[in-house]
Length: 459
Image 1 (spheres, rainbow, N blue to C red):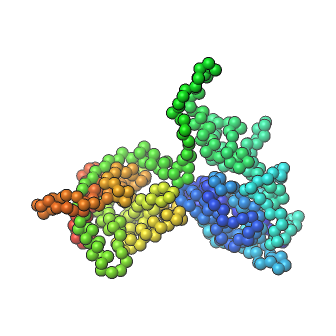
Image 2 (image 1 turned 90 degrees about the vertical axis):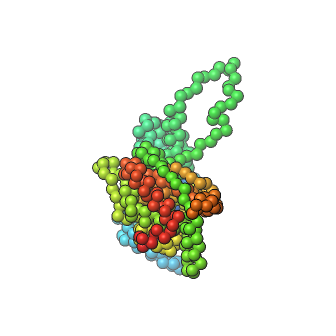
Image 3 (image 1 turned 45 degrees about the vertical axis):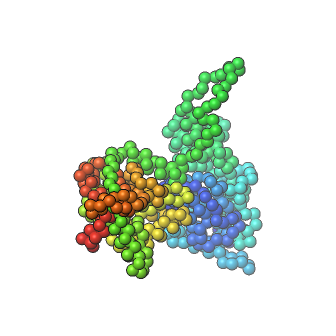
């Protein structure tokens, strides 16, 4: 006999507590294999395809595209069990450790029962009335109520009982946010499916409550012809954009940063790269050469490859360089991390930069590929600008910025000449070092740009 298993949104790692459904990859009634991706979700770190640990027939989906779900909320139910006559085998074993937070070598021993509710038409949780790959379950088989009647988000919520009925909220984060701001959820209109209250609804209600109410205008007094908010619209800071906003705000609050910069003659560096690429083999990128210069400079000035532990009041210096680099994508600016950049040569760095950039643009970076950096290289010259004072990528201690490389008049060997000039800037945490160290680091980087042979001393 078939058994119906409920698969919940797993722990996606890195402390993430919720995700937004971007795209369903299966329909109700589809037969799925073990570890087959069933839904694409967006977290505060990256886009992630979530694989299902069970093989069988999808009998219900929970959540419309665009809906935010907390970790542990139901995603799908899958009917698994031995095949019926003429059907393909439906696996009953789970997969291995597909994502952080759940292993599926054994099927769960417990099944949650949901109190039946009145049938309501819901698009995001549609049971299968007749699935040929699923035999009727006997009375002893535990089957979620979602297979008997359609389920609304309110029925899945941990209801906040009140005199006038339950509140349609699934996420415990939404409840906590409302509680911390003294907001009565019964007074909030939900914008989710079936009136489900989302985090954005609570945040909007909190903001509205904090804005002073305007003085009533009498019928004889016409309203103002224009308003500061006329024609405006609100864009929720959520997902990756919200995570970036939180991180940058924290960096500005906690880090006393300073910036120094210098112009450098990059003509010899560009010639060295051209000679490398003319010699055959994989092409070497300019970013890889700059990264190689960064790792050599950090070996001389390790103070900048560090972080500050506020709780312990200590500066933590790293023995390795996990180099982050800024990459522009359709979803915004992301900072993938090249692990152990100090141990890679220019060819290896070029290959890893190319892989991570392509993965970022496809929206397939994992949380692990976006975290753990110790120093960031920001090539904002690709935007056609000369300089910038970037915000440090918290909790790192420094960031090197590189502007565009363009022909400029330059005094070279006592004569005025046209040279390829670049502006380099270093933003650093003044707690980890003083200006002398930061200036020494930046000067060494500029020297390597102007005379690449300087790097030979560290090879």
